[in-house]
Length: 458
Image (cartoon, rainbow, N blue to C red; front, side):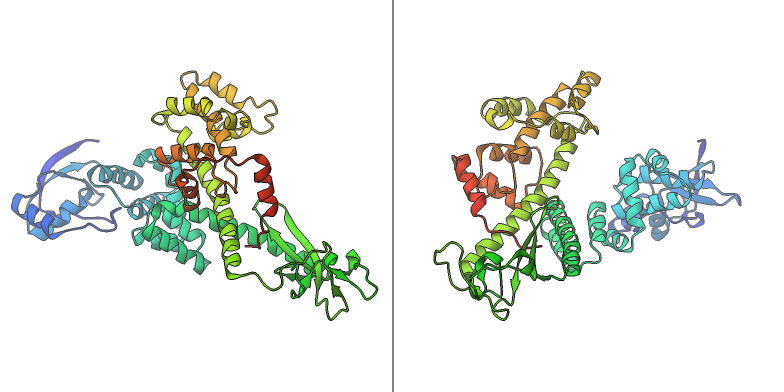
């Protein structure tokens, strides 16, 4: 691009729509230009009518006009295609003063309207293709566009757009963005899980109602409960009602990828002539749960769901970690400790999960050869496979109940991720903040799972 240096009256320059939403003409900046002039030449080009249009330096040009300057240095360049003007302007502005996500999304949107592909925009603007695609997506959504205009980041705007039809979720998201922005991914994943669970339960409810069953929130176990399981009831002859006598069902879903639990029972059993009889013969607690029991149950359910969400966020973060050009700081010591102090945790590591974390998973990888092939293809980066295997072993050890019985392996794993920059969720901090070693045996752990109260639907 050829260009000549000229002194031009700033009032004669045409300032087109710029990628900056706000030129930010502070009093201090205008005063500086008035006192010292424009020290760095702007760049402009002549259009078909011979007028000079500003290519780089909108802010300096407007400040020069505001300051009353009659001349400023201008590099006059050849005409550029509109898409090149916007793309080059984005790169130039980012070097001078970082654009906001709103400015960048608007620029990418303009270029996309001109028919420029995301890959081409990425090359012209020096951005990642994925970022360009997400910015264009955000700009097409009114909620995301408004969020960007309000100063939200691209990630924050897209999450707000994702839940724009849910006022309660939006309020939660806004609160986290304002107070704990590093927890946004964790909250968003919990909301996604809740939405997925609600959708599956809605389908199951419709199916049950089509079968003539009443869907109830809970099948109880006490004589004061309106709905009871068949095994707690007898008819006038002292016989337990048959399975086809059930007229109600309670639906529960523990995890998004789990099976829906369907517990049949009879609602309105007294009116139907049944009597209560415990099948175990022991005296059960009479009446509803105490407030303390309700609080414990609520905490149990909330933390289990939080662990489900944290797993998705955590694994995605580990994939991003292993995709970096260089290994995380202190990775050698991490491997040494993992393979010595925590060898019993990582010995049953999953090669498939390791390949997934390394970003090299393949479909129908029956021999689990993906990592082996990655090592062969990248001989200079063996640490990726080694880290993936160790991390996979530790990751599999952090299940949804880990917060109830924090183990040394889980504590070591999450603490290391936090040291590498991973934002721990509140429920994960329960594990890392527990300094007591876990010596609970497998039998105790299994018994604890069996004794756990079933979760209600989300």
